Length: 506
Ligand SMILES: Cc1cc2nc3c(=O)[nH]c(=O)nc-3n(C[C@H](O)[C@H](O)[C@H](O)COP(=O)(O)OP(=O)(O)OC[C@H]3O[C@@H](n4cnc5c(N)ncnc54)[C@H](O)[C@@H]3O)c2cc1C
Ligand SMILES: *[C@@H]1O[C@H](CO)[C@@H](O)[C@H](O)[C@H]1NC(C)=O
Ligand SMILES: *[C@@H]1O[C@H](CO)[C@@H](O)[C@H](O)[C@H]1NC(C)=O
Ligand SMILES: CC(=O)N[C@H]1CO[C@H](CO)[C@@H](O)[C@@H]1O
Image 1 (cartoon, rainbow, N blue to C red):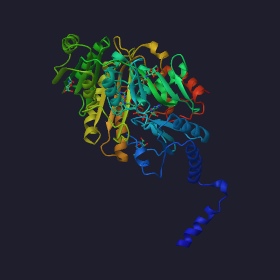
Image 2 (cartoon, rainbow, N blue to C red):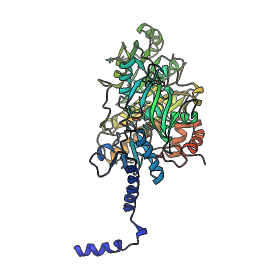
Image 3 (cartoon, rainbow, N blue to C red):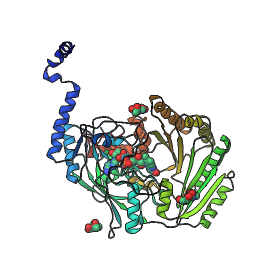
Image 4 (tube, rainbow, N blue to C red):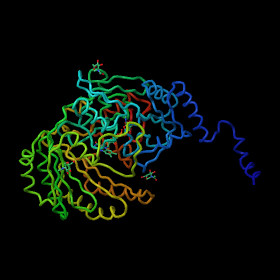
């Protein structure tokens, strides 16, 4: 037996050196690249190290990729050396922030990348003299909110999940306060960023303004942000949080109610945050949100005209909260604090988004089709181990701070005419090839039930089922051409590549 094996191996052993099997080539590329990192004293984690498995796990367990190497920089020089070595050896690089990308794009969205894990860059300091929050590129939202509040009772608008990291402001960043204060990306005043050549650059409106524009909306394609400077606002202490549930509606009644909400939303004041959520069994939905800086009486005055047109709610609550309690309530958590290093929560899901514009409001027909899908396909999906939800967040309408076309010049974020942003999400309780593909089919079908030509998608809900070209159009619309020019200028060799990264102009 042994002899036979040896004989079978002989032809391989005798192969000329140039014909090394791919596996070995990979190892060689790795050893020279790793030597390069070692010369820069970069803390590295190799596949053979015990911590590699934990550090390479995606938050979304549906999409696993094996990095070539992970680095755990503690200094700017470590990041700079990593990017330079990667450029030199043709290895693709991605920053890992909170790791919450829906498509695991911080791991590169394919095997063999170098992942720069930013967890040691988690400082959050409010600077009294500038009014900026100085935030490390590996910080998480919950810690940012809590620390700014503790240090100075200041706030930044951002999303709800405390563990989400700095990919969020790099690609948009919507929270329930965003109609009032803008997206998190709109609070970025300046950044310190390592570009593809390994240089640390300051980017602000008066210096490298084009780089700032690109980083604000498409950051992962342009560099690794080591520090963000966010403008801040005083934390609002009088916030009305409200929620109304409607259950047992017919498809027609649900669609009709949604259209009434839409008519109201089109002129709603910016202080109002509003979302419609549904899950599980179809046409029950919840209308909830927060009204900033207002009293319950003011809320009632605003909302009564809408409520009087809607079906009788099956339950409702309206009460007052401060800033931190409001964030906690929308996070569905008991605290905003998350571990700064060693975060290890995981889940398994498929999600995508649908962005509709103010110039093309949803129609009764499209919403009937949507609620019909929820009512006919939703219960089965939920019963078959795919608990799902849809949250339809109001972005535009009235004097919303998000939908100002002048902001197209200040950031590359693609959608400044959004009325609604749908997030369509299915958790996969037990991952098998069948449940994996059923989740994708179910959510894609949900999207198709309401999507019209011209509707877009939100880059922070990265959808790996979109092709590279589709993703560019749906995420960035009219901003994409200028982004390709910026990519050509700042990263022509695509050191920062992932399946939906920006292409350089020809
Ligand atoms: C539970 C949950 C709740 C969410 N809630 C909201 C919400 O309320 N509103 C909303 O808008 N979005 C929300 N999201 C989406 C979230 O904004 C995105 O998934 C976001 O991109 C995650 O950022 P991250 O740093 O955690 O992820 P990562 O996977 O680490 O990073 C995402 C992308 O950003 C890049 N990146 C990360 N850090 C840096 C850096 N320092 N410099 C350059 N590039 C960097 C990565 O390379 C990757 O391409 C939610 C996601 C989850 C999982
Ligand atoms: C789930 O399916 C996707 C394709 O949609 C595939 O890329 C992925 O590897 C699958 N996940 C697992 C863990 O099998
Ligand atoms: C605050 O910002 C100013 C101006 O940039 C700077 O000189 C100062 O060092 C900062 N303070 C702190 C505590 O970082
Ligand atoms: C209307 C609403 O959402 N009320 C919530 C406000 O916050 C409290 C406590 O966090 C919740 O219990 C309420 O349901």
